[in-house]
Image 1 (cartoon, rainbow, N blue to C red):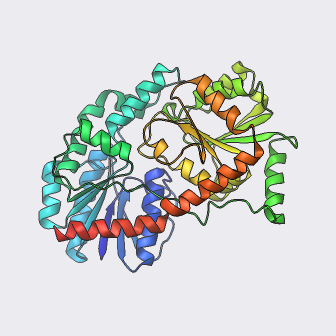
Image 2: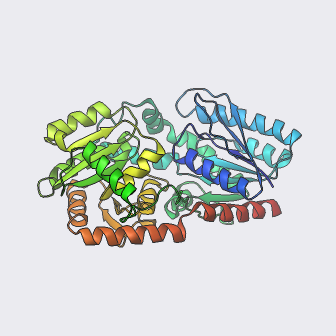
Length: 410
């Protein structure tokens, strides 16, 4: 089968979409299928995958409008590709590629049926920003992309409606995203829709082996880097330094929990809020107990997951959210929001949930989780088990192959 992926993100753009497309392509190619990924042009080295061809196309660097320019260029390149190497199915990754109904019709008529993955929605993104603003997150409206989403999400939502109404199969990445599509995007009553949660790399994100000298040495090395005492707990947050990720809320809750727990918080993420978050930590009097790293490679992040006692993910909006799964796969419990898609992955058996926007609720959840070392170990083991059962890359490949065949049969 020749599968063409239309994805606005692909490494070296390692966002959630880029990561999932990379891993899905790798698995499908290993199963003997031909994969072509048509993505936005970018600087940096593209990782080589056997059986995966990458085509880069131009795009306008304008907030939200890039989805239209990239979508148009991708469809043009897709037609060229199909003329040389016939495509069996097109896998469109929304919302970072915007096609009109006419563009969908052309693809369906001249090229192949379309399967549309919904990685979240623009209206959901807007809701997340509005929530972040209402709870006092720093610099909510200073980012041009956030401003564009705030004022133009409704306009670009019409292209998501086109995807829903013109795709052979719609694949939301969570039940929460499916519900969003049903309630606000005029989903047809007879649509073919199947929720497929994205999985994570369970060979990279693995638990620490308690009897491994190498793992013990690496853990001690990490703890020494942050100057941790023998009984100090290491708390970790991973995610882009953007308003809707909730790092301001996290710092306020950590300041409250730090009054009764011996802990150190490490935040890993790139973004424009580094200085503002450091200033907030200073204002709260916790600078000596907080480290904000501007970025790390996958191997380093996987080591951080293993070495941490608890991972915290306070995002105001996600289509699904992969960070909790990466932590669980690493055998580390997670505290996250009891809202949207996060409870579809996390519950009391693998971590804890808190009330969205509540500093007190998050602080209480942190204190509760770290109160028992035995409980942390047990929940970490349950988290790893859950990922292996329900959130693997192999499972993604098998599920999408079935969806592709169903689309082709239509």
